[in-house]
Length: 305
Length: 283
Image (cartoon, rainbow over all chains, first blue to last red; front, side):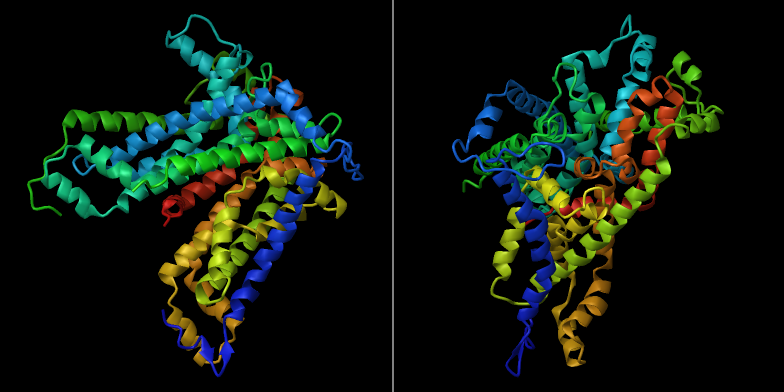
């Protein structure tokens, strides 16, 4: 690195590194660290009521809110729902993304139109999730709706289905929308990861007579470890904070079967009796779960060599 | 390239790949096609036959129904635009500046700062939301668009992206020669480093804009007055009682909320896809 002028006449430019970081650090302190600590503190208070910002620390029983949350059947159900919805979308998503990656990077089957396919597959990802969920609510309408029309006209079903009235179909639709919005993104990341692998490794494998399947499992997948970890972690953090789709599709219904943890937190803190303290305790619990699971993922995906 | 005779793939496999890809492409586009076409059809036509590929002539009628209720698309559009533009400008400018601090200068805390950014990138937003609400309430910024714009100065993902880009494309010699010419450090950043960063700033700008435009959770907490709501918060009205059974108006309303994104996307898809691909390549 050329740093001949870093020190000139005893004058160091290093301090500009600090100066130029000040706005970022300040914004972090004000808009991230302070609200985070504020949330932590609220979890140990009696804060509630719209527009009421006075609260007292619970000195006699500091863990009261945390215990109440962990005992609340709705919170446990919302955690379970969140996991189910995340797994139902992540497994098909990563599977399809890996298959598409194998196809798009195959050196034998040169697939044409990849640029077009990438643009189209990624498109749902940038469209407002709130609008997408309301759109799917209309598409799966009952008794008349595009999906019901298609299913009946194609002879796949005899009568129309009330999708939003059944826990399993509503969960299926939430998971499908998440899958449909995200597999294109995951695929583009994985393809760019594969393109970053040294082509000589592939050439050597071809000379050794490896087939496509062997190449994929023994070269591509091991070399994608870092990117797969990244994908898993970002999907985990996003998936366990899921809010927009289940909220706007059917508001957690039927019977709270699509109520997610973040929706539970919203309902505690910003509806009914505005129990900020309970919501804050629930956010801390959710954060600890996400952090613990991320640590497990890092541990499982670590480089064992 | 290997000098070996390349074996061509199995034609059946290639055909299968194209069939699957075309099916997925249709699956991506079809819901939006139904949305746009139904926004031109009357509620009666939609109830007779919910899917049609032929647009009808009832766009204006639908617009009258849609516009006649409490949903005010112009207000939502303007609020969303103010928030998205404001947040994008702050994110892009200050994240570039922070990345510049990390790349152009050697300072003691430089590596610590980078590690710190990698760590805070992983913290989910839900951790701050309730404290953020009470904080904004105390300083009287609820129902004020600034509550969504100012925090955009802090964008660790964008800093990470700009740092990677700068390491590859900002020649430090250039900064040295600027110093010899007597350029002050802040001037060098604004007039020499920033122009080089334009492609990266455009990419991050698009992402910041789309992210802010689409966000629902924080705006629905911080903006409760109707005339302050952003587009995604207003979308829930399309589902409520006010448009019950007015399907044409609902599809039209949805089309209007996402139309700006379609325009942005198809105009800039090349850069967006390249940006997504770059974001995934790490260490």
